[in-house]
Image (cartoon, rainbow, N blue to C red; front, side, top):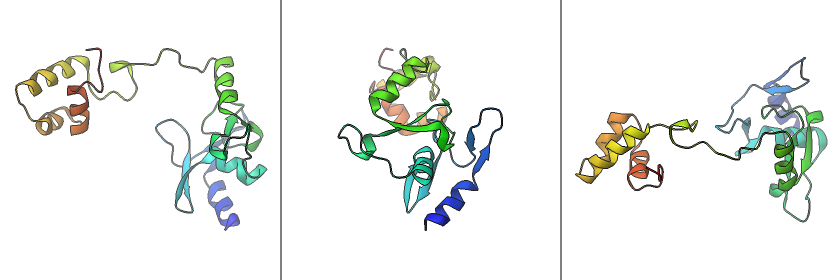
Length: 162
């Protein structure tokens, strides 16, 4: 089984000569990290790479292996080169992000957020329409979003500052 996993893994890896990174060419999550399915579970490929090339992910500071981070020295979330990966705690990972100026201290909100589906003006209109009884379902169709997106805007789960 391990040989089959290794072959499937390597079939989706493309070495990059400039940086030394091994780029993952398979599925990539919305957070920018590669992932694949192994034994019916979704796994992050940088963690899989660590295990395939360096061995099991060990416990650090008494936490379980899920609390042990596999940290990229190259700052490239789709890199799976084992020479660019090391183990650390969550604190190590956060310190590394700060040192490399990758830490977002002012997260993006509203229209500026990369996952925003609506504009502020649309949220205002949606709330007004909901207040007079317009259907969330109909508004979702009109704005090309899910009913949950409309509901969350109306009940201020999102767009709280408006």
